[in-house]
Amino acid sequence: MPPFVPLQHERLAPQESARRGEAFTAHLDARRTTRHFSTDAVPREWIEQAIRAAGTAPSGAHQQPWTFVAVSDPSLKQRMRDAAEEEERRFYAERITPEWRAALAPLGTDSVKTHLTDAPWVVVLFRQAYGHHDDGSRRTYYYTQESCGIAAGMFIAAVHTMGLVTLTHTPSPMGFLGDLLARPANEKAFLVMPVGYPAADAQVPALSRKALDEIAVFR
Ligand code: IYR
Image (cartoon, rainbow, N blue to C red; front, top):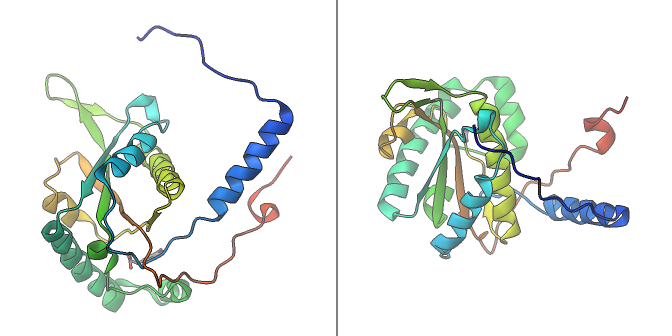
């Protein structure tokens, strides 16, 4: 077991806590998901920084069960797009239910995934469903879905803070990503996040967010 060390923590003045909370909320509230990306380049260092930020996420038993695969190679992005669109054409034509189609209608999604080739980076978050002991035997990992969800949130916040946009894309099924990106059997594709600048004419659906009293209960 690692030794324990003192927690580094600064107690803020109450008005400073309130001010920072408000500012952070306003910052996050300005984030929007868009499907329209510019092809402008983004330095690899910025993607590394966002992944570092995501890697600070808490995780089950501190097992950090995530691998971020950042793709900039145009031909690899094209192959990912081709495979995703093939799956999505099947989804929109056959597998989608009427209720699901109605739920997606306001978002204007379809099987065309231009963001996978327009965005300079496509970051695929893989969930490590289990790990390995030194002798190669399987090591159980705990709460991997929750852990990766938290890490994804931190990645999204970091990207937004850097003035970039991302789109949480979940092609279904996602098995093709493990094959295309040559990931080991314990890694399951969890979330696809193209990252870049928004296109000059990028649009977003006119949506509003639920109010506090719709998402919180105090007792
Ligand atoms: N995976 C499909 C469908 C889709 C599903 C949901 I729920 C969304 O919020 C958006 C899209 C696609 O990527 O188009």
